[in-house]
Image (cartoon, rainbow, N blue to C red; front, side):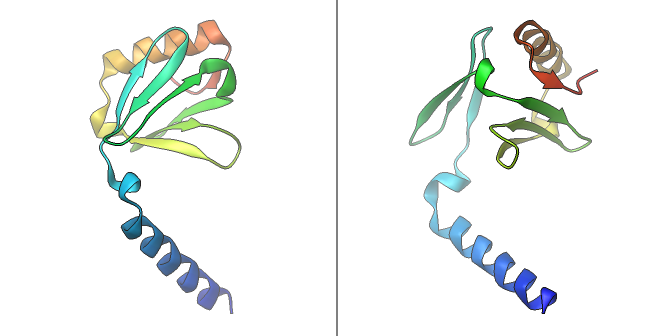
Length: 101
């Protein structure tokens, strides 16, 4: 039963991704001391650091969490060490939890 549910969930997510043009857009991220700016082909968004509960860096991804269940995922291959150092400084100044070293 669990396998069936997982399969249905996978194909539902895959279909939603293919049918959502925003999901496949290239997004440019700009960090400032006040906010994170995200610019895609069809939208622009800004998030104040006070609204970001945490940032997590893994071997392959940087996750910028909007809440406990939703995060922006940025591939690690697209991030420079300079960006990580600047981000760490900004997160420390704004009191955002992170695991950046």
